[in-house]
Image 1: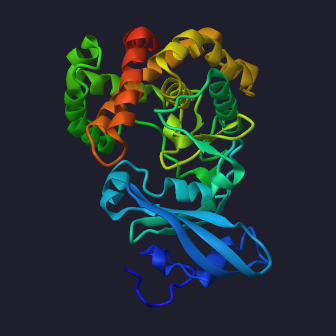
Image 2 (image 1 turned 135 degrees about the horizontal axis):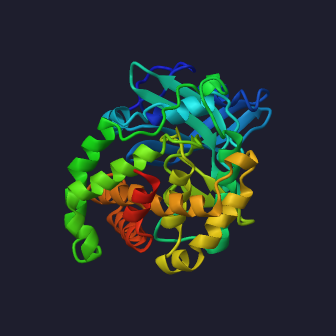
Length: 362
């Protein structure tokens, strides 16, 4: 319920009904300094793993967006995000003003309240640009995945070799590692994911069991701190993407942003976004599309063989993540989690990810 008191413009609303014209005027002022919001109305709200709402705006002075999208934490998921080291990442990234040289939503304001373990993003409503959000039930075309890989190559190139000295304002970004918080959640949920996937998952995957799947995840994530490192989106599966009318692919939800090896983004995006048939037919060419799009020192550019090996190993990440997600009931629909667990299971076997990890030395 709304508090009944005017919401201070520097505070995060506990209830969407607390958002006032004055609060929204302050929220968009950085991008639209002459605008005065006269009225706000809630168009849609979706309070799931995060709290989300779309607002319509009218103005008494100046001009600004007709609609905006607000995203904050849901109280019942804060601890999981905190435990995994993701709680404030997206808000800190956009508050930092960091350049993100691939398509992403414009963020008008980023707010953090550390004591309440909460954040808020006031951002562009992508529907105003005709964006088409995607998920596993609507796979991309090979051409669309190529667009997304070029975008990731731009991001990775811009932050190639990132460290505290090269980018002190981003020194808070964690380096990928198999942290205990992740292991606790994965170990708890993968068994249920395996049960729910029985009869769908290939036999060799089921026979690995939770311990085997976790072992491969740990081994792969352990390789991500080895050079070359860059800024990674960290959660670049198809459900965090959209396709613009011209075919360009953009990326949403930067909560898992990390410092690490490029292959984590590339593998998670490519394998999750294509049908298994399209992946098999096109993945080698697509990895080369990504490699050729990198703009990094020649002596640091992965060779074709190195890129392919790193990509082959990456399926170990998505396999554990999506079996774990399949073992939950509040993060993704059963249909989406089943589809993605199946895609990564097939890729893990067909790419022989276990052998690739041995060759890398994981």
